[in-house]
Amino acid sequence: MNAITKTEEKTAEAAGDVWDRQETETRKKRKSGRMALMVALPAAMIVIGSYVWITGGRYQETENAYLQQPKVSISAEASGRVVESHVTDNGAVKKGDVLFVIDPEPYRIALEQAEASLSAARLNIGQLRASYSQAIAKQKAAQNDVDYYQSELDRQNTLSAKGITSKATLDETKRNLTAAKDTLASANEAVTGALAALGGNPGIATDDHPTVKAALAARDKADYSLKQTTVTAPADGVLAQASSFQAGQLVSAGTALFALVENGDSWVEANFKETQLTHMREGQEAEVTFDTYPDQPIKATIQSIGAGTGSEFTLIPAQNATGNWVKVAQRIPVRLKVDGADMALRTGMSATVEVDTGVSRGLPGIFGTSTAKAAE
Image (cartoon, rainbow, N blue to C red; front, side):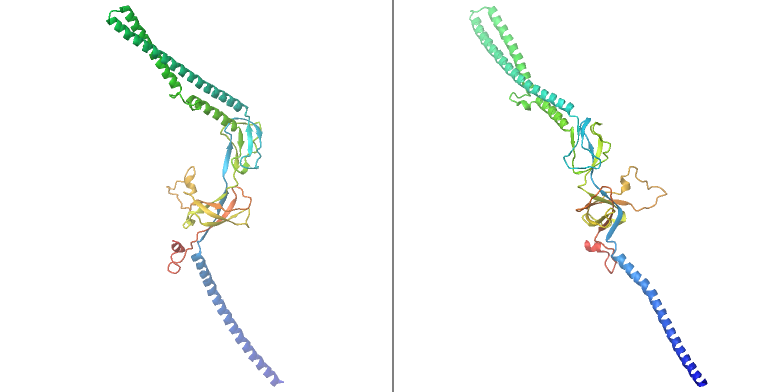
């Protein structure tokens, strides 16, 4: 029994030694694996981060972007009381739809008065032509009298030289000639005045006369004012801020009454940091995602880049010439044309914009200074 027990103890000790050696080897392997992992993981992160940085910078993104649509202030060009209204707040309209009508009666009366004045002006031109013809006739009669008395004076001078006629007859003939000349001068002035009244052209067309032109202009203005009593939509869109507009309201010419938002033309104004504009150019493609439709990104194109930062166009620009000045990255508005958006868009919607500049950072000496150089 003792021999058997000693054999078992030796076997157990041998097995324990084998187990200890295996455990030691396992611990060494685990330690080596941990060391390799501790070295490999940071190295991989460095490599991946370097790659992302080197190849990054191509896409510039901002969430400071909003949808814009043209807004037109609707006002009347004629003053008066609204007698008919088709305006509803947030109502959709088409170009040419009647929005409201101002009482046209005063303007219709003004048009009739202007037409009457036009008829009177045309009639007056006919009278001026008749006066001109009368002046011409009187001028001819006066010229004939002058010619007659001149010939009579010549005859009397001849007879007086021969001693046939008396001095009294000769003097009377001279007096008659002088009177005839005075009458001719007056007739000439009358012709000049009648011609001037016709604008210097006796054959002028009636509607070409300045007086008639003025009457025509007054008639056209009255007709225009009458047409302005009917106010129509200047474009397709949606009415806004029109809840208080009602029939019976008294409106003044030029006063803004409500707004029309033209939803047929939309663009996005994205405010990028100035550091993001280094390689941004007009015509570059972009992707716009509206907060209202987060899963429906749409294509867009850069139309223009703002002429300055937003602070440059504020009512009171910032004064940086102080000791408390802190450098802050400014934002510059970039306008993007939205291409064929098949969704209900409303002005002021928030959006996220990502612009593809086509330019990565690159690494000097390996990837070149940047892909911008290659693009140039």
